[in-house]
Image (cartoon, rainbow, N blue to C red; front, side):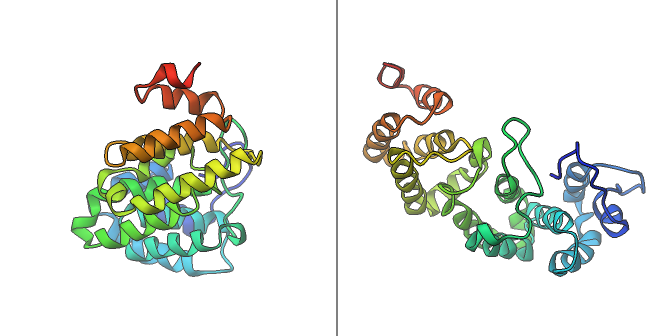
Length: 238
């Protein structure tokens, strides 16, 4: 979400939609989004869709609107995630949120969290297929953008099963990037390790090979620890 240390303030429209709870009291967007899962999302959706589609609106507001809609398994939210992932470097929302530790853009990490955790809403909304496609779009750029541990939110069993080829392809591209010495400013190694471990049960031979290749690419201590926790610690930490 927008950096709390900045002086950014929501405009009145966004304040009413995502900074005001259902009792009319000030609240944080994360709390409003969670509370809306009980049905309140219906009264906030139209305003958020209008905001999301307004190209002249504050980029941070549009980003928050997308996060909310995707969290509520809204088809427009999912479609917007897919569109954003198709051209991540051109996205107007990039730079609207940063991680606290490395000050790197984590826009897509929040979108991954929203898409992944919307699984409890898809039956009610009838958007299970749309969620899978939104997850697939994010997985396809997992070697290019920061997801960090929020990559786990894309690794629910139903997503892993449907997107197996996309996951393995992203890992292969990411390992090739690290092997070539092209280390991004975010921790690509740890998110690749998470994906490898998620595929290990259904693709054990591929996963074993991918672990060797990732470990050899100097992915960083966090990635090596993640690989070690997969059960073959002596192999990775030698």
